[in-house]
Length: 194
Image 1 (cartoon, rainbow, N blue to C red):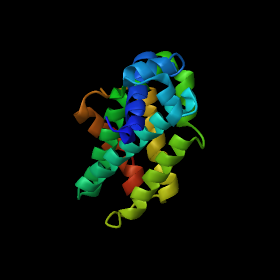
Image 2 (cartoon, rainbow, N blue to C red; image 1 turned 180 degrees about the horizontal axis):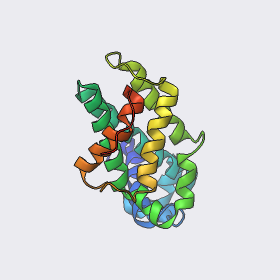
Image 3 (tube, rainbow, N blue to C red; image 1 turned 180 degrees about the vertical axis):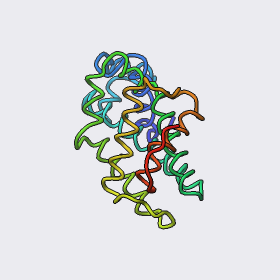
Image 4 (cartoon, rainbow, N blue to C red; image 1 turned 60 degrees about the vertical axis):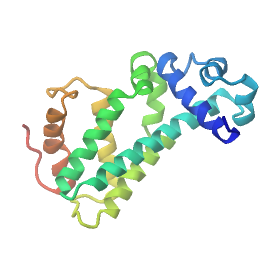
């Protein structure tokens, strides 16, 4: 395999290992074994295990946001655009192996990535605000910065505390929840319980 692909192999392996073992317990040896590389090769690309994991998680976030951007662009109707993008976000995070492993076994390690001005939270908020600003065909009822934060907070709540009156594994029920509680503040109107 070409040398240029080595960092990708390392990050892919880190994600797989973190999904199986968790962030705290995974070692450079685990990642090297999973990637089929020597430990020294990992260190030639990343100085520490923490740097490997940070790069892997930030790359996962970039892939996630790209998927949401594609979903957002697929739909013409503003309500459908909001609903389907949020459904994809919640579904993706609720099925992501690393996120789910951390929620089960190391929630204290996941929380710093999701609050305050952490790089992932900041990127996610900025992404949502940018999407709102770039959607010139949609008249949002809220400014993009607080709107982006609202969307991220609501998505986080559905991922972090999944117990609900809605079956969040059922896309139709998730769509009803989003239509009732996400769409009104973003597009105007009062929330409507369904």
